[in-house]
Length: 519
Image (cartoon, rainbow, N blue to C red; front, side):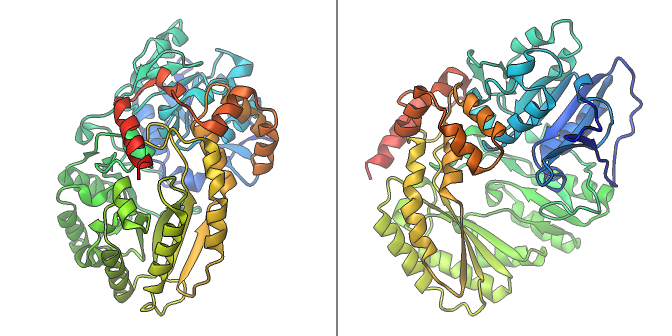
């Protein structure tokens, strides 16, 4: 396919940093593809890492591609070369719905696995969702990297120069070949301090990245709390973090390169990192701003809120998930409503623009009447707030995910939250704004997350009908009996157990699921 086709266009950006590398015909040519627009893609540390690291390797040339959702076109950032001249494409798929976009893109490019087979470019997917369950990608990509790729990415790339790269990749640890019939053990990085972190990060001054400008810093991976609904904490277990001295070094060197005195921290549990409060204080003393991710309610206190305010952040994001505290503690979110109210009062007094709260509805082990009553009681206690829409509530249906205690729920369970959603939509409040994820999108996500190899056919069919919910509904009508069965009844023995060894005891998942059902 020519680069000037209607679907694949050459659209370089005015960027602060690009790699000018003199290529040779014998170079291994790698595409790095994101299924999201440029301003979102540059906030991906995988995108940043892969571009800088792969181009640092001898005999390797890496090129970037992003997807413009509005025009539905792939944009090549670095080259006008035909995409079919690439040896491989690394495609990042952190979320299940990204699979549909990937199928749409690869089909339009003529390089989806079901059509091209094992010819180049080889399509190698990675990310949180494929790691947990690669099966729904069976007819879409060639390989999935199970886990974290830093320790093997150079081996993956150099294998492409061998006489039989497919065999080389099939035999590699942590790399699973479609149809993912062999169990592959997850790879993970034990020591983040000695793991590669991109310091020379690219962006365009004409397209502000999500989260704004600044050096993006991965502070930690995983989470020590293993909340029952959270796939990320289970799949990335154990909790690992960088030493604060290393975090400071990354921040200072990144700022020196970018000339922007601001850090954007990535962490599931920032205040679980030893010494992080002291580091934030040092950043303030040095005139450095910072963006802090969502924090646990019990980690928030007046001192930390003041630190965050001094770091220049205008919004606090908290993740209580459930306002029924007896239930929230059972799922891994232990806090008191009194403390949450105190945090909100302090945030209001300190002059934050907003406080964002993440909530989940549809827990099967929580009575809806108790959930709604707790919400009403909570809203009643917000009378001290005089600012309109100071509280921003993001309400999501529970989406069952692999490798969590809720993995045994059927996807159709998500649709049962529609009644809950209608109740929340009826609430009227001057101090709180409630945004709610459409249960149909959550249902589609669950169908893919808990899918089998047959689900890949559904994903491709969806992509052929367009990327909206209409395409999903059309694809559902063509399901076979296996897909209909798990969508309605769930799995007794999840099929991803035969593809992935996550290192998580299955007995733990079974016992915790039984514990939650016993509430």
